[in-house]
Image (cartoon, rainbow, N blue to C red; front, top):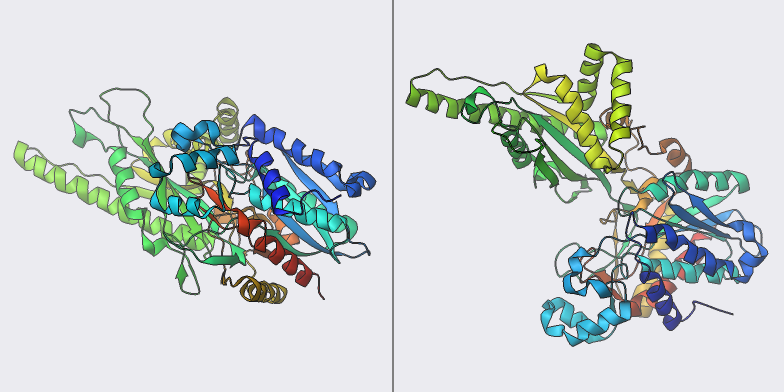
Length: 540
């Protein structure tokens, strides 16, 4: 008996899954796989093949679901269906927090209070085919469609195998996906599988406010988080020219990087969004009249074709430009002050270096073994910190041991890192995209525009063919947490190198309280387009 083959059944499934508040890092996120396992284990296929349904655990105790459905006739051809079941927090929902995970109740509340909603939201609500709620768009609707496709496969609908993978932690550090990669490689080798594509159904992202175009993606954008620890020189507030305030340094570094289009990577002339600041703060604890002398600024930066080595060189140039501006600002104000007081002006020189250079300096001073012991102790002591905070702490503590080098600006990288991946030149992907586009246009009068990179960041980064295969030494050497609780299975990723494709539902306002899903498209045309694409992918 079919469970998820009608719009009504898929909508009920979506509501049931959204009702579990699987916020990244929560207990509900840990519990969520049990629902999927329970539902799939009731299917006739998995009653007959229980070993093909697995709950696999990541290093931190969270788990992912793997469900393998074989075609009626033995074949190596396999399409991987990827999804994630974690969602972001609901603090942004304000007065509607209690209903954030109740899709139908929240939608009805919004109907009753339509005058409180933004105009674009009112227009969608009035159409009658949009549902609201955290996770409705990103991405439990895509997960629902994948479960429907898996059910079809279990009834012999496809000439190839479907491998369903749903993971936790996509919204934070991709712990689930990084744990899935070795599993995928193990299955590939065990059964000699031919992975035709890694097919994700993340929702379509608008390229600009008001964008109502529909997209299909043949890659996924890369993301890196460069940080700059600014080490000044402490002094009493009554003698500010005897030191150098690190908050001034961080401010000028941020001014150099924030929204700087020189740092926009490009794909065939199309730029990625510019970098933007995520964290900027002084690291001084408590109040005193000593000036701040350690501050940090941390950025989100997107990657397309650029290598880590090229990026590092560019970032160091920007940091050096900021250093010269810091020196000039200090010199000019010191000269003005000296003239007014009849004193002599002091000067400051700011050096720029990488974390890799800093750690080698610490090892020369303290010994390699001692530095390794200190880093291990800090990680153990502050294990409750997130990866960003722990990265900052390690750089900060090592810089304190090398304080004779200050003033200085230290470039480092914090997790997570997502490699850019693309498949738009792959012949099978091109044929599949064309097939789906033609179907969308001819049957649904919908134009699907191909984008080379999904801009919302996705776990496809950890399985696809990297856009730039150059050495990751610059990343490893300048990431304080590398092999200290954070790593990426690059060897396994390279061994997989599966083409990627993303086609998902139409939605609006990801990670906002107005997150919503066009349920008519998701559980109608989208599913049919994916079915058509899967059939095309299984062709020789």
